[in-house]
Length: 269
Ligand code: ATP
Ligand code: TZP
Ligand code: MG
Ligand code: MG
Image (cartoon, rainbow, N blue to C red; front, side, top):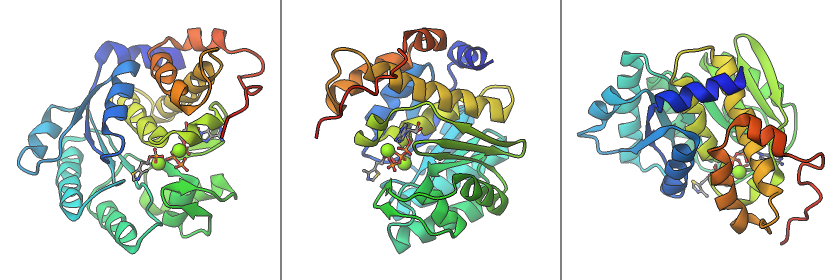
């Protein structure tokens, strides 16, 4: 099932409109291309509705959003809602400042997301549950299912909460994903790129829960596979190997991972 979903995305190569942060634009475009989607980054107010018109999915990531960007996100999001294409919102660092918190609230009032995706700290902030955060990073621990369910109920959409374990929450229930590697905490944009890949997976026909599960599981497995490559010595050498792995078949990743899942390799600081 997961393989079929990924094959279908690669056959269709859906165009995914990104309004995302300036830290990750290039990484997200390369990662999505490797996976088998087609990225376009566009945030000029005068063209944004036309870009939504030709796209199959919209990703709104507030990581470095200025006031203007939020207005553009609302314009694009409303057009996407009108067209009925999926919208993924990543509230990067939402708890870090009053500005982020208020603009995300506004965005969620004006645009109906298909999925809200974020790390545990960000989603706990949206849910009004106490959690540890440091800027755009989640540092705390707690009940991730409670957080995911609370966000779903509050915003009436599916939720993907990421971290060491990921919670995929839809009206069908909760799926916990355990694929992934802690090296992903040492590269910037790990969560942002997952948002791009998730948007591509839900931009084609199919079941939302299965598509989100396929995206999150595949992404984590690609990280495990890349990390165990002999040439990987840390975050720098991990990056190109990870991009490569995102282009492989799921069965290749599954067969290629050893029992240790690369965990024997120490991360160097
Ligand atoms: P943060 O800034 O807190 O790192 P993020 O937005 O980058 O948040 P993550 O929670 O890091 O997002 O999730 C990105 C990807 O990394 C997900 O696929 C997640 O499963 C994976 N991941 C993150 N931490 C770990 C970990 N300790 N072990 C395994 N996988 C992880
Ligand atoms: N600062 C603003 S956006 C951003 C940083 C470091 C990237 C965050 O990426 P991710 O995927 O949420 O870790
Ligand atoms: Mg991260
Ligand atoms: Mg993030």
